[in-house]
Amino acid sequence: MSQRGPSPIAEKRVALVTGAGRGIGRAIALELAAADFSLCMVARTREQLDDTRALTGLPKERSLLVLIDLASEDAPAAVMQTVLDCYGRIDVLVNNAGWAPPRTSIMKMRAEDLDRVLAVNLRAPIALTRLAALKMTDQGCGAIINIASSAAQKTPAGEAVYAAAKAGLIAFTRASFQELRLDGIKLSAIVPGLVDTSLIPQNKRLVRALMLSPADVAHAVMQVVNSPARACPVEITLEPQFDPERSR
Image 1 (cartoon, rainbow, N blue to C red):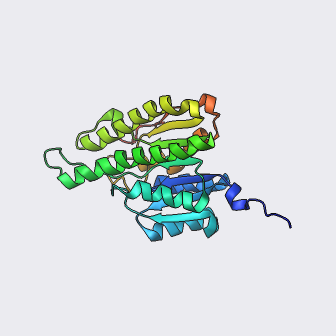
Image 2 (cartoon, rainbow, N blue to C red):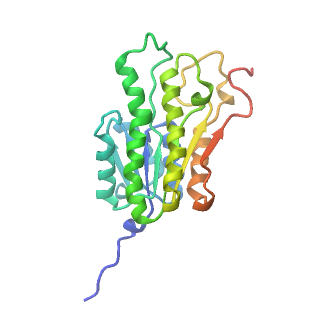
Image 3 (cartoon, rainbow, N blue to C red):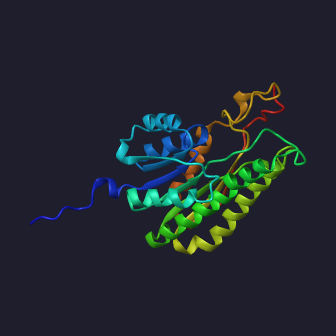
């Protein structure tokens, strides 16, 4: 009696991308799909995830959609369990989901907005990194990529909590790299400047054509994915050639 080997789907590398419904997350999902990864795509809006799945061209059995709010304390564990139940492995984690209210003075910021900024931009990536690392350590390989922001370095007024969360994410990435590098796990923070997405409101002072594109960030992610573990870029800073806030 012949035995069946592992299914082709089970043999594919698996990537989990948060905030995959639009913008940077969608661009990252498209790059990973083009590299023949099976995907778990996480967001809060079903229609956006459906559109991303269609653009990847992946069949449903290789493009898992998870509708969840990462501000919920239990969300990271639920997402990771769903991925492992479906695919049995995780090779790449991209913590891309982010949230911030319109620029607001810390004195006027609502307590619920403060909590949400920290939960989505810092607590959830930390929790997902921990859970992914547990599985990747067993596998002996993996890549964890955290999408930060130049706000962590430029610390603009009105974005104090967001800047603090992204600065914390960069520090967390660097420290985690030191802990996990001997387990064959790559960790990197991508630190982009202004990216032309719907999250950046229209502003006459900005020349959107000079901003980074979501594809620019996705290419940086793939640089980490494709790098050897012995030469992982721990931090990649992306800035447009010309400053969108000054150029005309």
